[in-house]
Image 1 (cartoon, rainbow, N blue to C red):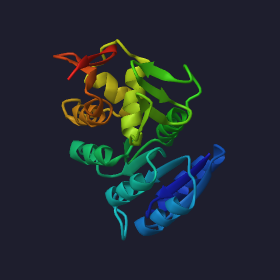
Image 2: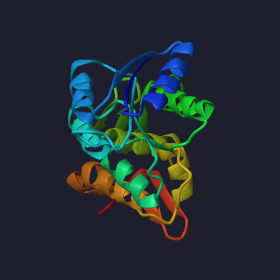
Image 3: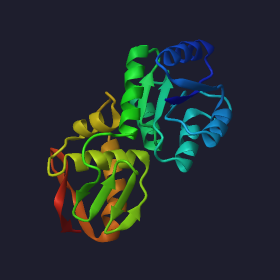
Image 4: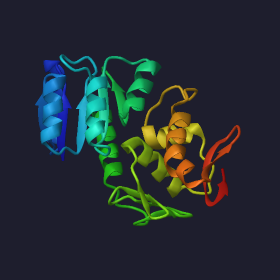
Length: 228
């Protein structure tokens, strides 16, 4: 497992590098955002850990640049900024998880392993399907009516959860737990925002509704679509 750590605090770097290497990970370190960007462009990583307060390019900017090139690599923000607004901004820009300093290494390790497991699933059916929508967890491809649809990593993860639980109503809290793995204010609208992103890509162009809103309860992806 190869990790890119973009961090400028030497003590944090020393702790993480030692901890991950003891667990068998290969760790590359960048001390600023610009170097981190170049390393992300030039190498393939299983997960990227980003601080927010970085020199040259901050973590938000770097996350955005990485996502423009790679929609799938898991990104975990590791920062002292712990407000709900900070978390929502990072997730909206494409981060997959968010850990606030100070932290317990074993919790961080568990989150890293969870993210990398989801990025390379080895469970469930090869292809998930509802109506003419198909999602392949192995190839990371989504098609509607045979037409390829491009999703971001977060959109893909959300759609995968909805498909694995199709015809079952999932609350916003359920989706946050399964897709974002965060314990933050479930009153935020991040789930609704990403549901809307999905609808614009897998429903609107095809003139039918797959993801149903269940008022007061959450969302459900149905096998039988309805007209928009």
